[in-house]
Length: 275
Length: 261
Image 1 (cartoon, chains in turn brown, red):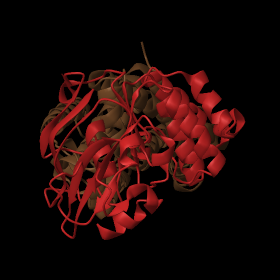
Image 2 (cartoon, each protein chain N blue to C red):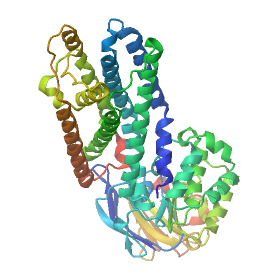
Image 3 (cartoon, chains in turn red, blue):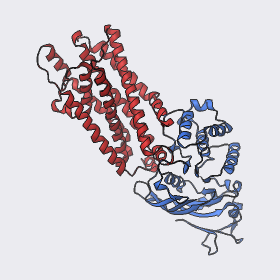
Image 4 (cartoon, each protein chain N blue to C red):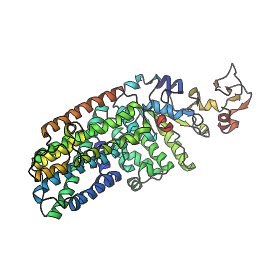
């Protein structure tokens, strides 16, 4: 049976003022910019591709923003977690399960909010619903993306504790947001083979593929759109390989996280005060 | 019975903060000592949130290192173990009572006694409460569980005199093994029937029953007949039954002794 921690954790994420401001309102601003400014020269025939690209990119930046708050919350709670998993009915396994499930549900709700706002704005602007062509594909890929984000965030939290570097906690918590802008660079830069390695690029490619039923680009989105409109062959990324790569990332990070938990001796509260 | 054997703790592998602490607690105990003596670190080590360098802690023969996901062992009013969620105080209370299998109604009753109403708890967050309100909240969580060991770190801090008396009443009625750390010494007179132990420079000295403690005399040297001898880097103090030196009760407060340490 799930504890009250599970429900309260989802609620605490959803009502977190940092999540609301940086995760939703900040991304909403860029959605408005995307729909009302960045689509001005886009032909209607390519609008779905643009919407899919915007959604993929903004979702990553949004998840990166949300990850900052989630990593910091997890880090702040680390002493409570150590106590709770020892002396409460929530043992380590059940805690991990409830924390995982609650975070995934929150990330899915968050992804849905970002998508509804974008598609809603596009409908208001263009009078048309730009819905994904493969609903099942986009749903499943969003779940996989949420799982990736979870193991990635846990990795960021555990690495601080394992290396006993609390003074870098703030910097490390911002890494997902910084990395999300690497993916944003793909509007202008062609990542070629690197597109299969950088996890945040994989996410935008997977979203694009299931949203449009068309192969994503390896990068240089603007340039490749122009090539497409001129009938030239753009540089495509393999979506299945992208998905496979993301799953490998999940497995790899999960294994590292497991080792970090096993090997970690923890940071004492007093060490934090010294920092 | 809580048995601590050879417990040592350091901060990041540096100097030891707790030095080979060995003690058995078999009834309610006051842990007295000045600020920085290691009382809170001692509690953190029992709670499992500060890594140990060495040592074992047993509760009724059970090695606490082996305890995982079990209620009824240890609860404490340390703020750092109540940071699980960023939610209002009422929800936080519900979550902790659920996880620790405590009594939410009892907790609310205690909070009401101390002037913290449900409507206030639903609006406030732990970090937005005043230091006194936060202390009351954490004390209420501890007193509303059925844990066998209740660790109360400076539970009287920031409370007004009326609330201090109320808390003493609640502590007297509680049947758990309470270990109460404080640097306030006026409590000694109020808690007869308790034991007292001293903590200085990361080492525990004692225990003595509080009733016996008040009748002892203080001499500033090692005395072969001492009930308790406390050695620190600066001074040696012996507590003796023989009427020599100064009567401990006359100090009114142990602060004078702390100064010497």
